[in-house]
Image 1 (tube, rainbow, N blue to C red):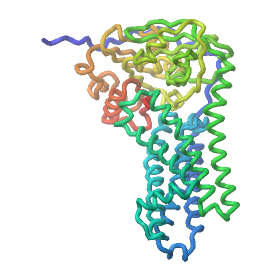
Image 2 (cartoon, helix red, strand yellow):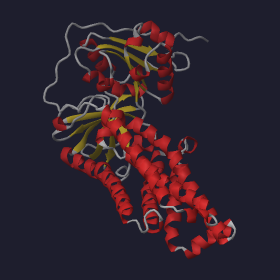
Image 3 (cartoon, rainbow, N blue to C red):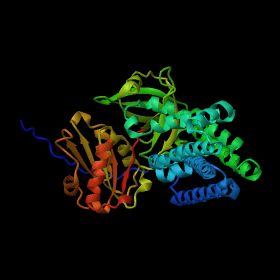
Image 4 (cartoon, helix red, strand yellow):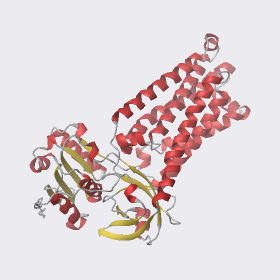
Length: 465
């Protein structure tokens, strides 16, 4: 039986112009050159680490039995440890990086560096074991046993190696998809312990540091600076911000099937520098939820003293949030994300969202400048699934834009290149903002590329772990 799917319905236009907001602290403008400078600094540091590892060796040590294996292992250990530090810095919430490229891009870089870092650490363990075994003229298994029983300092290194391997394995997509977010998050906390144990092992036994006080001091400063930035931006700053704004739940409001808004009230929200499209990590301070932090986008710009986040109630955490009582305190970390009007390269934009993914688009739409030429395309399975429909329609009308609502099952109604060309003939000249399920975003981005939209004009952000 063929079911007729309603076509997209454009809304009308209104004569009024968007109101200009006053009194709200603006998010600083991104500075891409800072990213380039940080990348250059990281490259210089990598070269210095390689040079340090090479200089520490001598011809005689290389010529000794197992010398080449041992040298390769030491060099792999140094470079692997350095890349581990880079990985940590990429997700340390450094404001100058996060502001310019967004947490989503930093996470992608983190995942690209990870296989190299873990591979080098594994190579370090393998080559060092082979080198020592060849020097002692014993088998590999025998050498491993010697390490465990006669090298007390290596027990810490072995424990750290195990923790790093555990974090690496759980990061693979195949494994990640079978883990709850909370489980994955707790496992990754042990990465910091693994790094601390690896650092202690390197400083105590590394040939590049023993007898080289300047190199040792520099390495200690680098590790201490990394730990300091993690402590400052991942722990102290969120605590300070949460205490400053003192957010509390005011109301839980149902917006559609399985979708609800959490209305919060806080202090000095006019001093919270946030742009439409950004998100926070939210920690609801109840007995069941206090230890869990999840990324949720604002579904509207703050209206002091109120903030709002709209959530799809999936999983145990979603159900628990629906049962929050008024007065429940909230801790926040953020705001994060480059999915803002700062990312656009023109005044013509098209916002494309599906399901609860329209919520950051609604906040972004509110934050666009008066001069923007806006087209909004929303996709939902049913009319009941159109979240914040009336608000989005009002915002589009105020800026004389166009709104299209695509209603129907996802396997029958798709936002593809044909539909985009029909509703947005000039899409190649527009910035395209996409938000929704990962599959939806990938399909729409691919369709936009086929319609000659430049990659730098396609903006999307995923909050998956």
